[in-house]
Picture 1 (tube, one colour):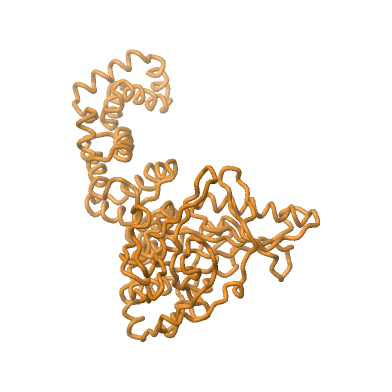
Picture 2 (cartoon, one colour):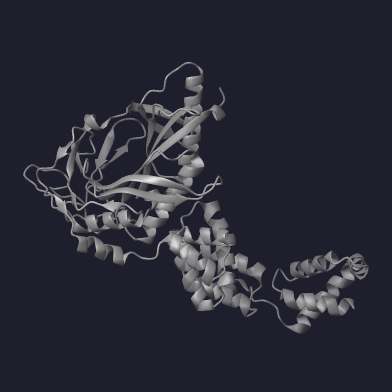
Length: 478
Protein backbone atom coordinates (compact mmCIF):
# COMPACT_ATOMS: atom_id res chain seq x y z
CA UNK A 1 0.00 0.00 0.00
CA UNK A 2 1.12 3.57 -0.62
CA UNK A 3 1.62 6.20 2.05
CA UNK A 4 -1.57 7.90 0.82
CA UNK A 5 -3.56 4.85 2.00
CA UNK A 6 -2.68 5.59 5.63
CA UNK A 7 -3.75 8.32 8.03
CA UNK A 8 -1.09 9.78 10.30
CA UNK A 9 -1.97 10.46 13.94
CA UNK A 10 0.35 12.72 15.95
CA UNK A 11 0.26 13.93 19.53
CA UNK A 12 2.75 16.26 21.21
CA UNK A 13 4.09 16.72 24.71
CA UNK A 14 5.76 20.13 24.81
CA UNK A 15 8.02 21.10 27.71
CA UNK A 16 8.57 24.82 28.30
CA UNK A 17 11.03 26.09 30.91
CA UNK A 18 9.40 28.85 32.91
CA UNK A 19 11.09 32.25 33.21
CA UNK A 20 11.17 32.30 37.01
CA UNK A 21 14.31 33.59 38.72
CA UNK A 22 14.55 30.58 41.02
CA UNK A 23 13.86 26.86 40.74
CA UNK A 24 10.54 25.20 41.43
CA UNK A 25 11.26 23.88 44.96
CA UNK A 26 14.33 25.83 46.13
CA UNK A 27 15.99 29.25 45.82
CA UNK A 28 18.74 28.25 43.37
CA UNK A 29 18.93 30.52 40.28
CA UNK A 30 17.65 29.28 36.91
CA UNK A 31 19.89 31.37 34.62
CA UNK A 32 21.35 29.53 31.62
CA UNK A 33 25.05 29.01 30.92
CA UNK A 34 26.59 28.85 34.41
CA UNK A 35 29.57 26.59 35.13
CA UNK A 36 28.44 22.98 35.78
CA UNK A 37 26.98 22.24 39.22
CA UNK A 38 27.18 25.82 40.50
CA UNK A 39 23.42 26.43 40.66
CA UNK A 40 22.69 23.60 43.06
CA UNK A 41 21.80 23.10 46.73
CA UNK A 42 20.90 20.21 49.05
CA UNK A 43 17.25 20.38 47.91
CA UNK A 44 17.75 20.10 44.15
CA UNK A 45 20.53 17.52 44.64
CA UNK A 46 18.09 15.52 46.82
CA UNK A 47 20.15 15.29 49.98
CA UNK A 48 18.46 13.27 52.79
CA UNK A 49 16.33 15.32 55.15
CA UNK A 50 15.63 18.19 52.76
CA UNK A 51 12.12 19.41 52.03
CA UNK A 52 10.82 21.09 48.84
CA UNK A 53 8.74 24.28 48.98
CA UNK A 54 6.64 25.12 45.90
CA UNK A 55 7.52 28.36 44.08
CA UNK A 56 4.23 30.30 43.84
CA UNK A 57 5.33 32.01 40.61
CA UNK A 58 5.40 28.60 38.90
CA UNK A 59 1.70 28.11 39.64
CA UNK A 60 0.90 31.63 38.39
CA UNK A 61 2.78 31.08 35.12
CA UNK A 62 1.09 27.71 34.54
CA UNK A 63 -2.33 29.26 35.12
CA UNK A 64 -1.45 32.09 32.68
CA UNK A 65 -0.56 29.48 30.05
CA UNK A 66 -3.79 27.62 30.75
CA UNK A 67 -5.96 30.72 30.42
CA UNK A 68 -4.16 31.81 27.23
CA UNK A 69 -4.96 28.41 25.66
CA UNK A 70 -8.59 28.39 26.87
CA UNK A 71 -8.08 25.65 29.46
CA UNK A 72 -10.25 24.98 32.49
CA UNK A 73 -8.22 25.84 35.60
CA UNK A 74 -8.38 23.35 38.46
CA UNK A 75 -8.93 24.89 41.88
CA UNK A 76 -7.76 21.70 43.58
CA UNK A 77 -4.62 20.05 42.23
CA UNK A 78 -1.57 18.35 43.71
CA UNK A 79 2.01 17.27 43.07
CA UNK A 80 2.92 13.63 42.46
CA UNK A 81 6.09 11.59 42.43
CA UNK A 82 6.94 10.06 39.07
CA UNK A 83 9.49 7.32 39.67
CA UNK A 84 12.24 6.51 37.23
CA UNK A 85 15.95 5.81 37.41
CA UNK A 86 18.34 7.96 35.40
CA UNK A 87 21.71 9.36 36.52
CA UNK A 88 20.60 12.98 35.88
CA UNK A 89 17.78 12.62 38.45
CA UNK A 90 19.48 12.23 41.85
CA UNK A 91 16.42 11.29 43.89
CA UNK A 92 15.21 8.69 41.33
CA UNK A 93 11.83 10.41 41.03
CA UNK A 94 10.55 13.58 39.43
CA UNK A 95 7.96 15.78 41.11
CA UNK A 96 5.21 16.23 38.51
CA UNK A 97 1.40 16.09 38.33
CA UNK A 98 -0.60 12.99 37.40
CA UNK A 99 -4.38 12.81 37.84
CA UNK A 100 -4.98 16.38 39.03
CA UNK A 101 -3.18 18.78 36.66
CA UNK A 102 -3.56 22.55 37.00
CA UNK A 103 -5.09 23.05 33.55
CA UNK A 104 -7.24 20.84 31.29
CA UNK A 105 -9.34 20.82 28.10
CA UNK A 106 -7.84 23.74 26.17
CA UNK A 107 -7.34 24.39 22.47
CA UNK A 108 -5.21 26.16 19.89
CA UNK A 109 -6.37 27.27 16.43
CA UNK A 110 -4.08 26.69 13.44
CA UNK A 111 -4.47 27.51 9.74
CA UNK A 112 -3.01 24.75 7.53
CA UNK A 113 -3.51 24.78 3.77
CA UNK A 114 -6.62 22.60 4.11
CA UNK A 115 -8.34 25.26 6.26
CA UNK A 116 -8.66 26.41 9.87
CA UNK A 117 -8.43 23.62 12.46
CA UNK A 118 -8.72 23.31 16.25
CA UNK A 119 -6.12 21.25 18.10
CA UNK A 120 -7.21 20.12 21.54
CA UNK A 121 -4.98 20.46 24.60
CA UNK A 122 -5.48 17.60 27.05
CA UNK A 123 -3.67 19.19 29.97
CA UNK A 124 -0.99 21.57 31.18
CA UNK A 125 0.82 20.59 34.34
CA UNK A 126 3.86 21.73 36.31
CA UNK A 127 6.96 19.65 37.00
CA UNK A 128 10.67 19.92 37.68
CA UNK A 129 13.35 19.42 35.04
CA UNK A 130 16.08 16.82 35.37
CA UNK A 131 19.82 17.50 35.15
CA UNK A 132 21.90 17.09 32.02
CA UNK A 133 24.32 14.37 30.97
CA UNK A 134 27.43 15.51 29.09
CA UNK A 135 28.71 12.51 27.15
CA UNK A 136 32.38 12.06 26.36
CA UNK A 137 32.74 11.97 22.56
CA UNK A 138 35.20 9.06 22.82
CA UNK A 139 32.78 6.94 24.83
CA UNK A 140 34.81 6.97 28.04
CA UNK A 141 31.88 8.02 30.21
CA UNK A 142 29.45 10.83 31.02
CA UNK A 143 29.46 13.76 33.43
CA UNK A 144 26.35 14.97 35.24
CA UNK A 145 25.48 18.69 35.44
CA UNK A 146 22.65 19.33 37.91
CA UNK A 147 22.22 23.06 37.23
CA UNK A 148 19.02 22.26 35.34
CA UNK A 149 17.66 19.87 37.99
CA UNK A 150 14.66 21.56 39.58
CA UNK A 151 14.21 24.22 36.90
CA UNK A 152 10.41 24.65 36.60
CA UNK A 153 8.61 23.33 33.54
CA UNK A 154 5.12 23.27 32.22
CA UNK A 155 4.22 20.26 30.08
CA UNK A 156 1.56 20.96 27.46
CA UNK A 157 -0.02 17.73 26.22
CA UNK A 158 -2.03 17.88 23.00
CA UNK A 159 -4.86 15.61 21.94
CA UNK A 160 -3.89 13.25 19.06
CA UNK A 161 -5.52 15.71 16.64
CA UNK A 162 -2.54 16.44 14.40
CA UNK A 163 -2.44 14.73 11.02
CA UNK A 164 0.73 15.97 9.30
CA UNK A 165 4.14 17.52 9.87
CA UNK A 166 2.69 20.78 8.48
CA UNK A 167 0.05 20.86 11.24
CA UNK A 168 2.67 20.04 13.89
CA UNK A 169 4.89 22.89 12.68
CA UNK A 170 1.99 25.38 12.77
CA UNK A 171 0.82 24.18 16.20
CA UNK A 172 4.29 24.44 17.75
CA UNK A 173 4.92 27.90 16.30
CA UNK A 174 1.52 29.13 17.53
CA UNK A 175 2.13 27.67 21.00
CA UNK A 176 5.61 29.21 21.15
CA UNK A 177 4.13 32.56 20.14
CA UNK A 178 1.47 32.41 22.89
CA UNK A 179 4.04 31.54 25.58
CA UNK A 180 6.24 34.44 24.46
CA UNK A 181 3.32 36.90 24.46
CA UNK A 182 2.27 36.01 28.02
CA UNK A 183 5.96 36.11 29.07
CA UNK A 184 6.06 32.81 30.97
CA UNK A 185 8.97 31.33 28.95
CA UNK A 186 11.70 32.75 26.72
CA UNK A 187 11.16 29.69 24.44
CA UNK A 188 14.83 29.67 23.36
CA UNK A 189 14.90 26.31 21.62
CA UNK A 190 18.68 26.41 21.19
CA UNK A 191 19.00 26.52 25.01
CA UNK A 192 16.42 23.77 25.54
CA UNK A 193 13.79 26.16 26.93
CA UNK A 194 11.22 24.71 24.54
CA UNK A 195 11.34 21.09 23.46
CA UNK A 196 8.85 18.52 22.29
CA UNK A 197 8.24 14.79 22.57
CA UNK A 198 6.58 13.70 19.33
CA UNK A 199 4.24 10.66 19.28
CA UNK A 200 3.58 9.25 15.80
CA UNK A 201 1.34 6.39 14.65
CA UNK A 202 -0.35 5.37 11.41
CA UNK A 203 -3.63 3.63 10.63
CA UNK A 204 -5.41 2.67 7.42
CA UNK A 205 -7.69 5.41 6.15
CA UNK A 206 -11.19 4.96 7.52
CA UNK A 207 -10.01 3.04 10.60
CA UNK A 208 -11.13 4.29 14.03
CA UNK A 209 -8.62 2.45 16.22
CA UNK A 210 -5.29 4.17 16.83
CA UNK A 211 -2.14 2.40 15.68
CA UNK A 212 0.86 1.68 17.90
CA UNK A 213 2.78 4.89 18.55
CA UNK A 214 6.44 5.62 18.78
CA UNK A 215 7.86 8.61 20.64
CA UNK A 216 10.76 10.84 19.63
CA UNK A 217 12.10 12.59 22.73
CA UNK A 218 13.40 16.08 23.52
CA UNK A 219 13.38 17.64 20.05
CA UNK A 220 14.21 21.34 20.02
CA UNK A 221 14.22 22.44 16.38
CA UNK A 222 11.21 22.99 14.10
CA UNK A 223 13.20 21.78 11.10
CA UNK A 224 14.33 18.60 12.87
CA UNK A 225 10.80 17.84 14.08
CA UNK A 226 9.42 18.12 10.54
CA UNK A 227 12.18 15.92 9.11
CA UNK A 228 11.84 13.34 11.91
CA UNK A 229 8.05 13.06 11.47
CA UNK A 230 8.36 12.60 7.69
CA UNK A 231 11.01 9.90 8.16
CA UNK A 232 9.06 8.10 10.89
CA UNK A 233 5.84 8.05 8.81
CA UNK A 234 7.72 6.48 5.88
CA UNK A 235 9.43 3.99 8.20
CA UNK A 236 6.16 2.87 9.81
CA UNK A 237 4.40 2.54 6.44
CA UNK A 238 7.32 0.44 5.17
CA UNK A 239 7.22 -1.84 8.25
CA UNK A 240 3.45 -2.42 7.99
CA UNK A 241 3.51 -2.91 4.22
CA UNK A 242 6.14 -5.60 4.65
CA UNK A 243 4.07 -7.54 7.17
CA UNK A 244 5.81 -6.24 10.29
CA UNK A 245 4.35 -4.69 13.43
CA UNK A 246 5.18 -1.33 14.99
CA UNK A 247 6.76 -1.61 18.44
CA UNK A 248 5.83 0.92 21.12
CA UNK A 249 9.24 2.43 21.81
CA UNK A 250 11.17 5.60 22.45
CA UNK A 251 13.26 6.74 19.51
CA UNK A 252 16.23 9.04 19.07
CA UNK A 253 16.39 11.29 16.00
CA UNK A 254 19.83 11.57 14.43
CA UNK A 255 20.14 14.87 12.56
CA UNK A 256 23.20 13.81 10.54
CA UNK A 257 21.87 10.53 9.12
CA UNK A 258 18.26 11.74 9.00
CA UNK A 259 17.02 8.55 10.69
CA UNK A 260 15.42 7.44 13.96
CA UNK A 261 17.03 4.84 16.22
CA UNK A 262 15.50 2.83 19.04
CA UNK A 263 16.52 3.84 22.59
CA UNK A 264 14.21 1.78 24.83
CA UNK A 265 10.67 0.46 25.20
CA UNK A 266 8.14 3.25 25.70
CA UNK A 267 6.91 3.53 29.27
CA UNK A 268 3.23 3.69 30.23
CA UNK A 269 1.83 5.56 33.23
CA UNK A 270 1.90 2.44 35.43
CA UNK A 271 5.66 2.10 34.85
CA UNK A 272 6.20 5.39 36.71
CA UNK A 273 4.33 4.25 39.87
CA UNK A 274 2.81 7.70 40.52
CA UNK A 275 1.71 8.61 44.02
CA UNK A 276 1.00 11.97 45.77
CA UNK A 277 4.15 13.67 47.02
CA UNK A 278 3.93 13.50 50.83
CA UNK A 279 6.21 16.54 51.32
CA UNK A 280 4.00 19.00 49.42
CA UNK A 281 0.52 20.26 50.27
CA UNK A 282 -2.36 20.38 47.77
CA UNK A 283 -2.63 23.43 45.48
CA UNK A 284 -5.88 25.30 46.22
CA UNK A 285 -6.78 28.26 43.98
CA UNK A 286 -9.56 30.76 44.67
CA UNK A 287 -11.88 32.29 42.07
CA UNK A 288 -10.32 35.67 42.82
CA UNK A 289 -6.77 34.37 42.23
CA UNK A 290 -7.69 32.95 38.80
CA UNK A 291 -9.68 36.06 37.84
CA UNK A 292 -6.79 38.39 38.73
CA UNK A 293 -4.44 36.40 36.48
CA UNK A 294 -7.03 36.46 33.70
CA UNK A 295 -7.27 40.26 33.93
CA UNK A 296 -3.46 40.58 33.75
CA UNK A 297 -3.14 38.68 30.46
CA UNK A 298 -1.71 40.82 27.64
CA UNK A 299 -3.08 41.07 24.10
CA UNK A 300 -2.60 37.65 22.48
CA UNK A 301 -1.39 36.95 18.90
CA UNK A 302 -4.86 36.39 17.39
CA UNK A 303 -6.24 39.60 18.89
CA UNK A 304 -3.18 41.60 17.82
CA UNK A 305 -3.44 40.20 14.30
CA UNK A 306 -7.05 41.38 13.98
CA UNK A 307 -6.04 44.83 15.23
CA UNK A 308 -3.24 45.06 12.65
CA UNK A 309 -5.69 44.23 9.86
CA UNK A 310 -7.91 47.19 10.80
CA UNK A 311 -5.52 49.70 12.41
CA UNK A 312 -2.53 49.34 10.07
CA UNK A 313 -4.37 47.88 7.04
CA UNK A 314 -1.85 45.02 6.80
CA UNK A 315 -2.63 42.04 4.60
CA UNK A 316 -3.62 38.82 6.37
CA UNK A 317 -0.35 37.20 5.28
CA UNK A 318 1.79 40.07 6.62
CA UNK A 319 -0.16 40.26 9.88
CA UNK A 320 0.33 36.50 10.38
CA UNK A 321 4.10 36.78 9.89
CA UNK A 322 4.54 39.78 12.20
CA UNK A 323 2.29 38.59 15.03
CA UNK A 324 3.80 35.08 14.97
CA UNK A 325 6.56 36.48 17.22
CA UNK A 326 6.04 38.85 20.13
CA UNK A 327 9.47 40.33 19.45
CA UNK A 328 8.69 41.01 15.76
CA UNK A 329 5.31 42.42 16.71
CA UNK A 330 6.79 44.75 19.33
CA UNK A 331 9.54 45.76 16.89
CA UNK A 332 6.88 46.64 14.28
CA UNK A 333 4.69 48.67 16.64
CA UNK A 334 7.49 50.58 18.35
CA UNK A 335 9.37 51.39 15.12
CA UNK A 336 6.12 52.47 13.41
CA UNK A 337 5.36 54.91 16.23
CA UNK A 338 8.82 56.48 15.99
CA UNK A 339 9.03 56.91 12.21
CA UNK A 340 5.27 57.18 11.51
CA UNK A 341 5.61 54.90 8.49
CA UNK A 342 4.10 51.48 9.39
CA UNK A 343 3.93 50.41 5.75
CA UNK A 344 7.71 50.77 5.33
CA UNK A 345 8.45 49.05 8.67
CA UNK A 346 6.13 46.19 7.69
CA UNK A 347 7.89 45.79 4.33
CA UNK A 348 11.32 45.63 5.96
CA UNK A 349 10.19 43.01 8.49
CA UNK A 350 8.39 40.67 6.10
CA UNK A 351 11.04 40.90 3.37
CA UNK A 352 14.69 41.54 4.21
CA UNK A 353 14.56 40.95 7.98
CA UNK A 354 12.57 37.70 7.62
CA UNK A 355 14.90 36.54 4.84
CA UNK A 356 18.01 37.07 6.98
CA UNK A 357 16.36 35.33 9.95
CA UNK A 358 15.57 32.31 7.76
CA UNK A 359 19.00 32.18 6.16
CA UNK A 360 20.80 32.36 9.51
CA UNK A 361 18.20 30.23 11.39
CA UNK A 362 18.08 33.06 13.92
CA UNK A 363 15.18 33.53 16.32
CA UNK A 364 13.56 37.00 16.16
CA UNK A 365 14.53 37.65 19.78
CA UNK A 366 18.19 37.44 18.64
CA UNK A 367 17.85 40.41 16.25
CA UNK A 368 20.82 42.57 17.30
CA UNK A 369 19.20 45.99 16.77
CA UNK A 370 16.19 47.66 18.37
CA UNK A 371 13.08 49.49 17.17
CA UNK A 372 14.80 52.90 17.34
CA UNK A 373 17.51 51.77 14.92
CA UNK A 374 15.01 50.20 12.52
CA UNK A 375 12.90 53.39 12.63
CA UNK A 376 16.01 55.47 11.93
CA UNK A 377 16.79 53.34 8.86
CA UNK A 378 13.28 54.04 7.52
CA UNK A 379 13.64 57.77 8.29
CA UNK A 380 16.99 57.96 6.46
CA UNK A 381 15.31 56.58 3.33
CA UNK A 382 12.34 58.94 3.71
CA UNK A 383 14.69 61.94 4.05
CA UNK A 384 16.62 60.89 0.95
CA UNK A 385 19.86 60.40 2.91
CA UNK A 386 20.20 56.88 1.47
CA UNK A 387 18.48 54.92 -1.29
CA UNK A 388 16.54 51.70 -0.73
CA UNK A 389 19.35 49.67 -2.30
CA UNK A 390 21.91 51.20 0.07
CA UNK A 391 19.51 50.63 2.98
CA UNK A 392 19.57 46.89 2.23
CA UNK A 393 23.36 46.94 2.64
CA UNK A 394 23.01 48.96 5.86
CA UNK A 395 20.57 46.35 7.24
CA UNK A 396 23.05 43.53 6.57
CA UNK A 397 25.70 45.51 8.48
CA UNK A 398 23.23 46.05 11.34
CA UNK A 399 22.88 42.26 11.61
CA UNK A 400 26.56 41.38 11.18
CA UNK A 401 28.19 44.28 13.07
CA UNK A 402 25.40 45.92 15.12
CA UNK A 403 25.64 49.70 15.44
CA UNK A 404 23.64 52.80 14.62
CA UNK A 405 22.65 53.01 10.91
CA UNK A 406 23.95 56.61 10.66
CA UNK A 407 27.38 55.47 11.90
CA UNK A 408 27.41 52.70 9.27
CA UNK A 409 26.52 55.16 6.48
CA UNK A 410 29.23 57.61 7.59
CA UNK A 411 31.89 54.89 7.88
CA UNK A 412 31.07 53.38 4.47
CA UNK A 413 30.51 56.70 2.66
CA UNK A 414 27.04 55.56 1.58
CA UNK A 415 25.26 58.94 1.72
CA UNK A 416 22.91 59.28 -1.26
CA UNK A 417 23.92 61.66 -4.06
CA UNK A 418 21.11 64.22 -4.44
CA UNK A 419 23.13 67.03 -6.00
CA UNK A 420 21.53 67.94 -9.35
CA UNK A 421 24.83 68.79 -11.01
CA UNK A 422 26.49 65.52 -10.01
CA UNK A 423 23.48 63.46 -11.08
CA UNK A 424 23.21 65.27 -14.43
CA UNK A 425 26.86 64.39 -15.16
CA UNK A 426 26.10 60.70 -14.61
CA UNK A 427 22.91 60.86 -16.71
CA UNK A 428 24.73 62.46 -19.70
CA UNK A 429 27.53 59.87 -19.45
CA UNK A 430 25.10 56.93 -19.38
CA UNK A 431 23.10 58.32 -22.33
CA UNK A 432 26.29 58.75 -24.39
CA UNK A 433 27.42 55.17 -23.60
CA UNK A 434 24.02 53.57 -24.39
CA UNK A 435 22.74 54.95 -27.74
CA UNK A 436 20.72 51.78 -28.46
CA UNK A 437 18.73 52.15 -25.22
CA UNK A 438 18.07 55.81 -26.10
CA UNK A 439 16.66 54.74 -29.48
CA UNK A 440 14.59 51.96 -27.83
CA UNK A 441 13.05 54.41 -25.38
CA UNK A 442 12.20 56.89 -28.11
CA UNK A 443 10.61 54.00 -30.03
CA UNK A 444 8.23 53.46 -27.12
CA UNK A 445 10.05 50.77 -25.14
CA UNK A 446 9.54 51.89 -21.53
CA UNK A 447 11.85 49.14 -20.20
CA UNK A 448 14.79 50.99 -21.73
CA UNK A 449 14.39 53.73 -19.09
CA UNK A 450 14.75 51.16 -16.29
CA UNK A 451 17.93 49.87 -17.90
CA UNK A 452 19.41 53.38 -18.11
CA UNK A 453 18.54 54.12 -14.48
CA UNK A 454 20.16 50.82 -13.52
CA UNK A 455 23.34 51.76 -15.36
CA UNK A 456 23.41 55.11 -13.53
CA UNK A 457 22.96 53.37 -10.17
CA UNK A 458 25.80 51.04 -11.08
CA UNK A 459 27.96 54.02 -12.01
CA UNK A 460 27.32 55.65 -8.62
CA UNK A 461 27.52 52.34 -6.71
CA UNK A 462 23.87 52.66 -5.70
CA UNK A 463 24.28 56.10 -4.15
CA UNK A 464 22.34 58.25 -6.65
CA UNK A 465 18.83 59.38 -5.73
CA UNK A 466 16.65 57.08 -7.91
CA UNK A 467 13.71 59.52 -8.11
CA UNK A 468 16.01 62.30 -9.34
CA UNK A 469 17.61 59.93 -11.84
CA UNK A 470 14.23 58.94 -13.28
CA UNK A 471 13.12 62.54 -13.61
CA UNK A 472 16.40 63.73 -15.16
CA UNK A 473 16.56 60.88 -17.66
CA UNK A 474 13.01 61.69 -18.83
CA UNK A 475 13.92 65.36 -19.22
CA UNK A 476 17.09 64.62 -21.19
CA UNK A 477 15.34 62.03 -23.38
CA UNK A 478 12.72 64.58 -24.47
